Image (cartoon, rainbow, N blue to C red; front, side):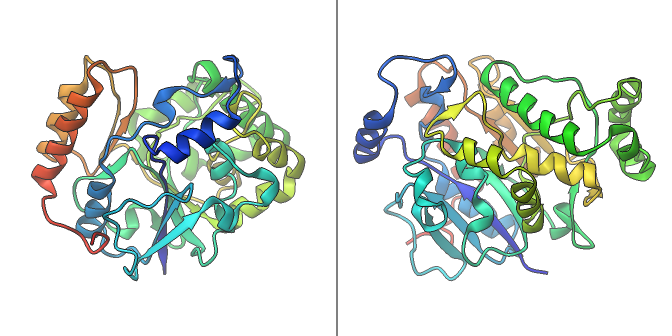
Length: 329
């Protein structure tokens, strides 16, 4: 079974990109539109992401690097495992230019040559130890954990998650869905099952446990959601910047969970998510150096001394991944 990876990346330091960004960005700050610096700044760690893929997941067939026509000068364009993808290569012209990650995510199934089975990465998700194909797919199904939760996201992401849930509750009956006991009350989930049990009395889905890790998908799922909600998907894709009325790729994940097209797995056992702050930054750096986890997410946050911390992060990755990969010139 071929398994691809799709990764979205933007170089917020690129002057031409900044000019384009400023051309379309709202002139005054709007609470329903997100143009914050953390959405776009670059930590300079993409080369280590590729090194991690080569060293810890050599079974990957192809990496589709999606950018706004930005290619790092160190990229090996002749690498047969690499597919450089511009937004205009797969997004309809009506949606361009787009600075909205939700809109870009919602169209990735259109990428030419993308395998039916693929794993979606954000550029803040890194491999720091070996993983097998079975970590993401088992018997042709994406691995995941079906855990009901209360709505946890705040601010704009809270609105987007609520939009995703609204779609799910219109298309799926919670009480019928959770009757698949082996998927929703699986012992692999450990204590997470208690969340689902506690929320059983509620007739509608109040939320799902969102792990923020690389997510396995089948292209068929994305096609099904577009067929079911074409107007909503189109509306999201018309927003040039992330908007509170958007839906994002979590909707595709929720759809797989509710339809039952996934294989139960506690995806948190080998992974750790850090929402980076000045308080936990040193802990995250230590986790990289000691390779404490197979997968690690370094979610950008309101950090002070960004330039200094950027150097520290690059040094940590260089300590465990010092050798150039096939993806580098």
